[in-house]
Image (cartoon, rainbow, N blue to C red; front, side, top):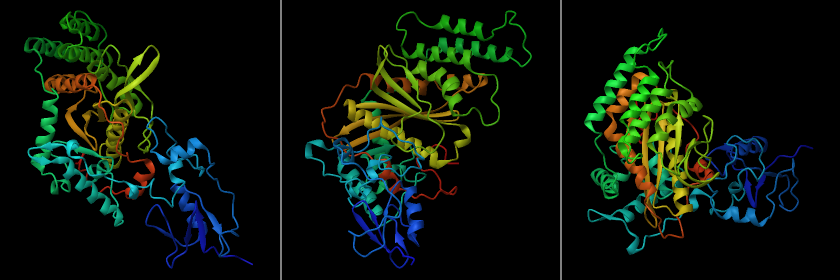
Length: 482
C-alpha cells in the first residue's frame, strides 16, 4: 500500500500540505509533493522528516536526517550571528545541521530576518545633522524595509543594497547614488551633505601633489611608454623599466618616507616594475588581478610599519556574506595577524555588468568592516571594491550606538598596463584623499559600546533577497550601471 505524505517536520515545526502544495518556509514557493519539497529544502540547506500518520509521535522517517546535537557551543552559536572569521562552503551539498547552524531552528524568528529588532535610539545616542534627527529617520527607513519583507516583497542585490545594509544598521552614503526610498526620510541633499561633513570632520581631505615632482614624474613615465615596444631588444640609454624605477626613486624624499607624496611615488615605481605592456581582451582574472596588478599600487598606498596587505585567495564564485574577503589589511605582530583595519573585494572586468555580484561585494565588505569594528571596538574601518580597472574606496564609522555610516571616499581608475600610469598620476588628488582616509582609520581610536546591532547573516540574506536574477535590473548603488 502506497502512503501519501501530507505532513512534514522541520526541526520542531510541522508543515501541512495545502491546496497548492507544501509551502517553503524560506521562500514563497509551493512544492506539489514530499519528494520535491525535500529536494527543494536542500537548496536552503534545510532537512525534513516525512510524517505518514496524523500523529507526530508515530512519524515514520523516509531517510535518516541530521539532527543538531545539543552541545553548549552549538546552542550559543544558534543564539548569535555567525562571526565573520568562521566561513562555510557556499555550495555545500550536505544538508547537515553543521553546515549552517542558523538554519536549524526554522520555527523561531530569532534567527530570521523577520526577527530583527530596531530599537528606538536613546536621546544622547542620536545622530543629529542640520537640525534633523538622522538616527530616528534612519530607523523609520529600517522599519519600512522590514514591513516590505513582512509583505513577502523580496529585495534584490542589484537595486536594494541600501535596504539590505540598513537591516544591519549601516547607512550607505554614496555621491549621487543613494536610493530614492531613503529620500522619503532623509533627503538627497541631506545625504550628500552628511557624507561630506563626515569626511571633512574626520580630516579626510584631498592634497595636491607637488607640481615640480609631478611634472618630473610625468616626463619619466612618458619617456618609458615611448621607448618600450614589442620589439625592444636593449636599453641603450633609453628610459626603460629599471632606469625609470631608479629615476622615480630619486624623487622620493629622505624625510617622512610614508608621507602622501612619497607613497604615490612608491606606488608608481612599483607599477613601472610590475605592469605589463598590454592587456588582452577583458583583462586579467581575479587572482592575477589581485597579485600582479593591484598589489603593486595598493600595498604602497596603504603602507605602514605594522600593516601588511594580505590576499585570501577566494574564488570568483557567488560567495555568501560571512566568508573572508579577497584582500585583508591587518595589524601584524611578528608572525601573527591581529586587528583587521580594512578589507576588499575584487572582480574581473567581465563581471562589471553583473550587478548581482558587484552588489554582493559591496554588501560583503560592509558587513566585514562592521564585524571588525564590533570585535575590536574600532571607530572606523576601511573597505574597498575593485571591478577591473576601477576601484571604489569607503570608510565605515560607528556613528552612534545603533547607527553606522558607510561613506564613499573616492572612485578612481586603476592602471592595468604601462600606458594607464599617466591616468593614475592625473588622479593624484583623489589618491591623496584615499591615503588620508586610511590614515584616519589607523588613528581613529576605539569606541565604548559593548553591545552591537545585529548583522545580517547568510540565512537572513537568503530570506530577504529574490533568488531569481535578471539582466534588466539596473544597479542603484554601483558605478557600473551601464
